[in-house]
Length: 358
Image 1 (cartoon, helix red, strand yellow):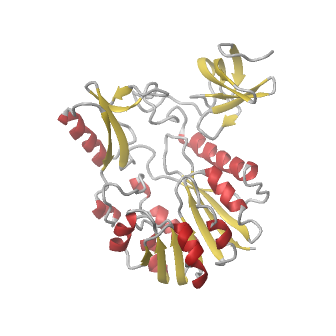
Image 2 (cartoon, one colour):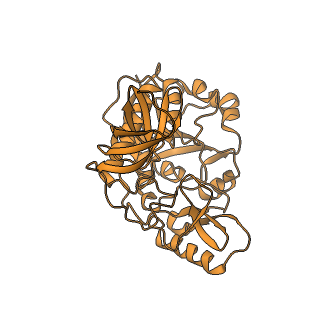
Image 3 (tube, one colour):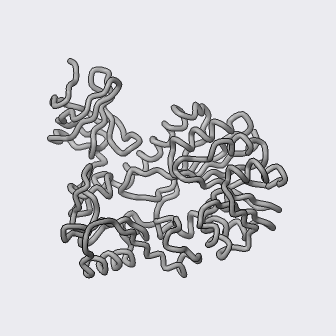
């Protein structure tokens, strides 16, 4: 049977794939099924057919998988903000681990991995201190699933109480026109940092203490730590407790906050330029990397190879993590890998990897 757009098929979901959909196979072709759970038996309609894969949407759940649950949110069927609300927390964690393991093996060609650990979020709901909200046509809320339409949301299950109050204030103000606005209820006194409105900051308030502590433990102690892509200093403050000296590099405007938040020697420059012009003059005990979703800039990984006995890589994308670790595989072994449960109820996977001289 040849699959075609509009065709109905019966599928058994095998596992969760990068991007959040479940994956099944039909006549040897991979089919990605939105809003599915491992173990689901579903009747689905093919909505997209490509040469090497297809996409489908569920029309009927014939048999639910063990990890499927009733979503803890009244907007779950319409809102596109959280795509894993239909999965219980254990299934979500297993999915993140499998997505990371698959990326490291498939993209990074990494054969020998330690057991992947998990840093759980203390809260699976009510954790977000930052969210992008859309408004227009008298509605304030989030974009609908696979649409630019706005779902009017009075209360969001994943927002922290402080951020929820910001949402309520925005709704009460009845904003004119249409657009988007980022709610940022950081209460910098709680985060211990100055964070200007345009700067990036980790959104899960429930992990503000545990995440830097775990990263710091992996970095160890010593004379000099070098942090690349330091942002506003979310991890830098922890490094300062463990190292006699810290060099922090940030090329964005966040560098001004970084300088205010830490005692580190701050290089306000592009990381690629630092690696090309400054790196060779330093001998750090550890290099901490926390790049954006695109991973490290070209040339950075090559110049880091062998520069420090330990490298700790904080990643927000398994694919670019796998690519960058592959570039270090000839000089380092992967000693630990940790999945960070940074965004419960969504498919996003964040991770930490510790590399040591092999």
